[in-house]
Length: 487
Image 1 (tube, rainbow, N blue to C red):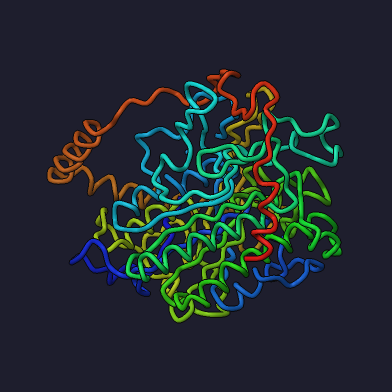
Image 2 (image 1 turned 90 degrees about the horizontal axis):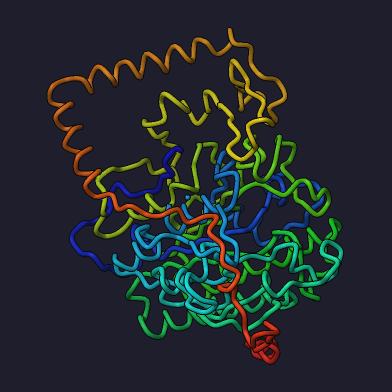
C-alpha cells in the first residue's frame, strides 16, 4: 500500500522526549467501526444530519481517496501494530514480537491510552490470563474496552439473535477486569467519553503538558448491531443507524472540545477514520458507500475506501479537501517517523500541510490518480472465484463506481510503462554495488526474523472470558451512569 504522509521533514533528532508541539504533537486516533465512505454529510450523504464529524471536516482536511484493508483486523493492526479477527475462544492473538503503535510511541516518551474495541486477542491459557489485552501491549491507561466486539450475539432487541445476548461473546472490560457480561450498550459511548476525559485530566495534571500522549479511541459503533442511548434514539431520519452515527459524532465533538478547553488543540493531531467499508448486506442498517461498488470484506472500492479526516488547528489546513491517495495502514510508519528520535530513515511528503505530491507515487498514482487496481478475493473458496483474464481494471477518477471495466487496449500502455519502470529498477539493482548492498540487507533481515506460530484457528472454549462462573453474568457498571452524567 501507499505511504501515508505527514509533515516530518523537519523532525528533530536531538532529544528523544520533547513537549508536545506542532511538529511533535499529541496523537489521537478516532477509529469508527464499519462506517461507509458515504455515511456522513461531509462525504455526501443526503439525509444524515450535520454532526461533529462534519465540523471536524470544516476545521480540518478531508481526504477523498483514503484506503484501509477490506476487513477489520489488518487496519486495527496497522493502527496498533501494522495483519483476521480473533474469536473469544481463540488461544492466539497479536504476537508479542509485533510492536504496537503504543509500544513504539511509549518507547519514544509518549504517555499512551485507549478505550473501546480491541479485537486483537484476549486469553491464551485460561479464562482470565489476559495475555493479549491492550494493557500488555504498550497502553499505560486502558479504560472500558471490548476485547471482542458488539457482534450479532449481543443484540438485546432479539431482532437479529432471537435467543438474546450470549455471554460467551458479549463482555465489557475495564482495564483487565470483566465488569459487564453480557454487556449493555445504552450508556457505553458516554462511558467511553468519560474515560477519555479521565485520561486527559491525568495527563494535564500529572505531566503539565510536558510529555506528549497517544490515545486510541476505538468506537464499537457503527458495527452491527447498531445502538444509541436514549438521548439519541429517534434523532435521525435514517433510523437507528443514523442515531448511532449521531451519538458517535457527539463523542467525537467531546474529544475535540476537551482538547480546545485544555488549551492543547494546536499541539494535538486528531485523525478520524473508519476501519473499512460498511456492512451493506444489512441494507438500511448497514451504512452507505455513496454508490461505490461493494462493501465490507469485499475488494471493490466500497470495501476499503474510507472517510478520513485530519484535524490540528494552526497546522492542518482548515476546510481543505485532499484528493491525494493515502492509506490508514501506513499510520504506524508515519507516526514512527514523527518521533523526536525517528527509528527509520525515510521521509515522506507533507501532504497534511500542502498539496505536494509524493514523488514515490509517480509510477502508480500520478497526482493521486491510481493507474490500475487488480482485485483478488482472499476469502472465497476457489470453486467460487471468478478469475478475470485480463484482470478488471477501472479508471477510478472517471469511474469511481467501477461500472465500466477498461478494455485491454485501454490500459496496455500503462502496463508497458510500469514494466519499463521495473526494468530500470532491475537494471540499477543488478549493479555490483547494489547486489552487494541488497545481499547484506537481506541477510540482516533474515537474521532478525523470529518464528511465530500461527495465531488463528486454534480454539479452546475453556479460555472464553467468564465472570461469576458458571453463570458468566455480572454488572459492575450499574452505578456508573450517575458518575458519567455528573462529570
